[in-house]
Amino acid sequence: EQLNTLQKLLIEETTYGKVVGKRLSLLEAFQKSPTREVLLEQLVAADDAQSREILITVGRQLLDYAFFQSLTQRVDAAATAAEKDKLIALRKEVQDVRDKIDSASRAFMQEKAQLIQTIASSKDPLQTARENADLMDDAFLQVLQMNMQSASQRGEENAIKALEAINDIAMQVMAERQPPEVQIVNALIAADYPEETKKILEEVKEMADDRLITVMIQYADQLSQQDRSDLAAKLTKVIVQARGILPKYDPNNDPNAEGPRDGGSAGPGGPGGPPPPPNTPPPGRPTGGLVGADGLIRGSAAPQDGPKPKIEIARR
Image (cartoon, rainbow, N blue to C red; front, side, top):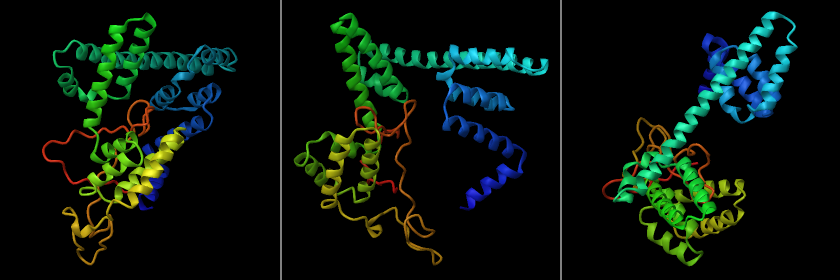
């Protein structure tokens, strides 16, 4: 609450804060009604180039012939020469920023396509993939799927098999980089209920506790929001199963927990309590969402070396 009050004060009272506040208002207006007309109105209303660039980036898919036709009509209908010059300059700016975005996007996708070729031609594809793990994300999988579809349309069976092998390698490398709790939930999603899921929960209960259930609930909610009600229902049943298997979290048995200090509270996140456990990774780029189209959870944490650490589950 203190930080929210401070942020509001800075936006209202500082010179740069007022710029940020107006920028947020422009974005909110477009996000509430993401149409060509609203995008054009907000671009005309934007006072600085950075705000316009953000709007152009967010509304890139709307910058088509119809959008520029509307902008040209506004130029022709301008009441004064100054207004007409401003709109002409805006049209050129929109075109330039759009071209810059498209160029960067092509370069980004080309980087993913080149990585596919590098892995395919490597003597040790798995090792090559691991060395380039930072470049393997949802965009990489998207380019890979596009290549597989293209090969399928051409009837190139050998290419399809090679690309499927790269896809398997990519999924393995991405799984290796996921936090332990994400790996567990993915394993539970893929396992048969109830026998295999019970076996997994029994195996991990020595290093996991009921905080894992909070993470499972979060992902079940996301699966529901993505219309994956089948997987969400399955994970919900596993959550009920986990409540009877996983031990309750005990700060006294947590080597990372600290005792009360200076009369502070010993509760989670309190002044004298244990440090907050690591967060679940943020949504991946560029498609977003913790749960991918395949129902598996995406993670972006670095791979763990050495002995497997005690699992810390993010509180939600």
